[in-house]
Length: 80
Image 1 (cartoon, one colour):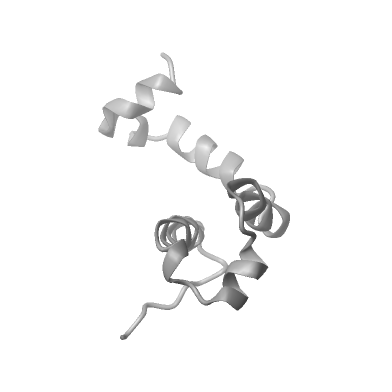
Image 2 (cartoon, one colour):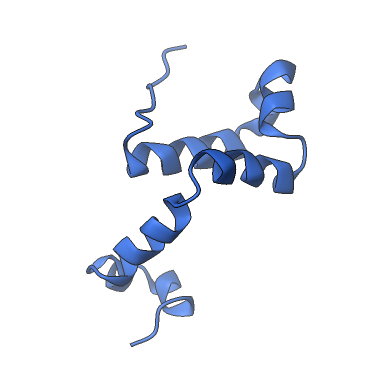
C-alpha cells in the first residue's frame, strides 16, 4: 500500500491523521495502538498532549470564516 505522509506543521494534515488513525484504529499494529492508547480517551489525550491548541485553533478558523456556513452540522456549535 502507498500511504500519504502527514505534515506535523499543517493543521489540515493533523486533523486528517487524527481522523484516519481513529477510523482505521483496528488496522494499526499492536505497537502503534499501544502508543496511541487503547481507549477513546487515551487516543484523544495522545493528540491533545502533542498538539494542545489544535482543536481550539480549528474551532476559531471555522468560527471566523465562511466554513461555518458550508456544513449544516456547524449550526450545532456556531450561532449567529
